[in-house]
Length: 230
Image (cartoon, rainbow, N blue to C red):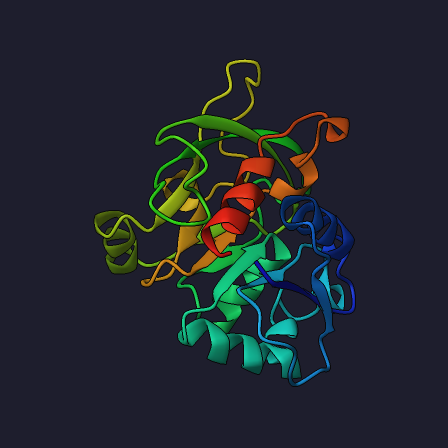
């Protein structure tokens, strides 16, 4: 599998994503600067976490206008797989590749800790390394992770099986309602586009891709992508 990681001014998880991809594939991904208009053909494009352009205007709003994003949109529409993590998820909603928006967390505070996720759909290269309804632990770190969309779109996401992950309860954390750290509609933590080749998720699988990180629940995602797209 050939991969690329897009780097925006303010990205801070680009190297983490690159390391996870290299461990899974044996090959370093192409690092693509946001101002580039083209890059080599790849099977997977990652939009990493961070604070692109300092989150001015809205998180992801300015990054969505970067020259390279036009190429990302073109390739996604042709079937290339795209993974947007945290700020990358925000960029995907700003481009229209995914529906809805990521708003300020319900408690208006930055949240940084590990959360429980329930895997809702395993029929994609992103999630096929997990079991359906498996609960995994992945860290979050965001201020604008409160997913929202209109009722009609939400109904469509549910009916079409496009919700990838939901936050779920952790009995050790009494302050959260249903394990939801940010107030997201229907506990949504990640979702697919209609063709299932674009995934946006707020939690960071690249931060639990090896044992030294304190967990390995994210490794299955990168490993399955490598096997499926090779």
